[in-house]
Length: 136
Image 1 (spheres, rainbow, N blue to C red):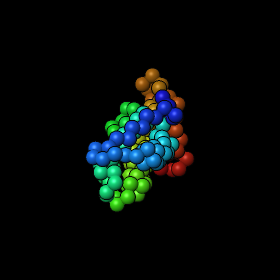
Image 2 (image 1 turned 180 degrees about the vertical axis):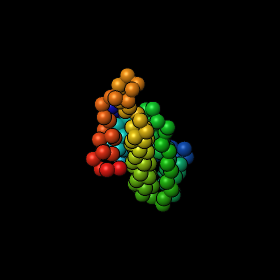
Image 3 (image 1 turned 60 degrees about the vertical axis):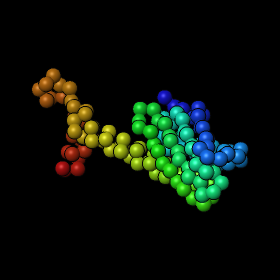
Image 4 (image 1 turned 120 degrees about the vertical axis):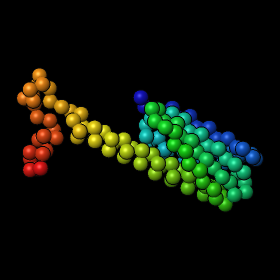
């Protein structure tokens, strides 16, 4: 299921008020995250003390995956948002790599076994062909 264009972004403040300009900047930056994972359904941005050394936290909700959470403190709101988006991008990339490696492990451990009635005389798998051709 693809959520591109349907990602809900919520910007809230714990102490103080987030101006419309600040909210627009945070939303604009957060809208870049779905290109790293198309299963993102919602992004929460929580700002604590938006005007003096703000601490910004982001919670990214992904379908069928644990939430990704990151926080960043900086002297300026824009710097905090930029650093936070970079952190979340790295986490999304790592999560995608872990998923790819898990899928590769499953396939190499026999996830694609030949079906030949149990006598082992079925078709060769992709892994069998690679092992034969590479001489492993």
